[in-house]
Length: 430
Image 1: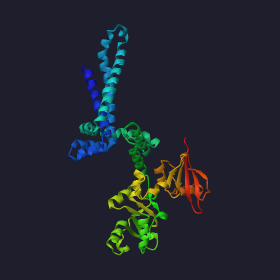
Image 2: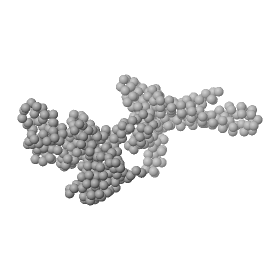
Image 3: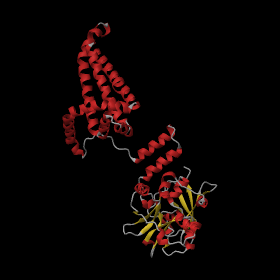
């Protein structure tokens, strides 16, 4: 009886270690941090384990292996000796009672180790991760101190062997790649209540982390900017007729942007009947390099409470502008206002499923509108520019078609003397 209780106690210790391992790994940092901020010492201990997973997982692994070895050795000898006289009473097993006892001991220990020592504690740890992690964190920290010399010795020994393979010991799992996260989001959409719209935002957010400002900006050739001595009629044309709320103002050339005008400021002056003084109404320009990550540009604009930044290259030449709306559209898709009705005509779906697209439509905007992924263009940002790039850098003949990857073909539907005006996009049904 004592032997059985001892083995069961060891299996319970194995369960506590398994539960602690799963609970710390599965616990949410935000919940632990909130509890720690409220003064919970146990939560702080759990956070320390979570933030140093290599030492924590190494300690747990060592003690799990040690407990498993002790259970095996102790159970195989003492418990088998207890069971042998019982088995000998069965006539069929009288001559092999010791061997049968060992088999029974192995089966019993395996069953208890798997069910009690692994499955039950890990299931509970997944459901109650934070409470279990906070309760078991301090005992595990004590084990870390005890196991520190053993961890050092085992890792040094492993690294001596792994050095020949140009590798080293680590107890930390490989970090999730962006593709893994995208697959998890896709799976969550089909297996849980995650809506397709939420999935789209998640996927755009994952892609957003790889973008630079140069990928999102309005290129220089499309920027509506005015000289510092612009007339009132030019202002009206830019702000009222074209509908731009912010207009960059330059001195000499567009590379000399001095600031920008806000339409609300201009309208307030006109409403009050005061003369327009451009230099006095200028708001300072904020410049960002085209190599700046898009997510950082979004944070910078939010922090500075700005809606527009001027994009420059390494030489300080203006390459375009980027607005808060441009950045947000990469996350949530196209944002239209009441004046953007004509924008919907930039890409029309025809009866046969093909898309007829204006040549000046941005490639990324077309992808957001149609859901068709095209090969990433090297230099071209517009659909017409992409066709020219695929044509080897020259204007193609009308009707010429080009493969754009993912089973998609681009047709130069309308070509002028200087550019591709319309593009027809077809995607194979396979």
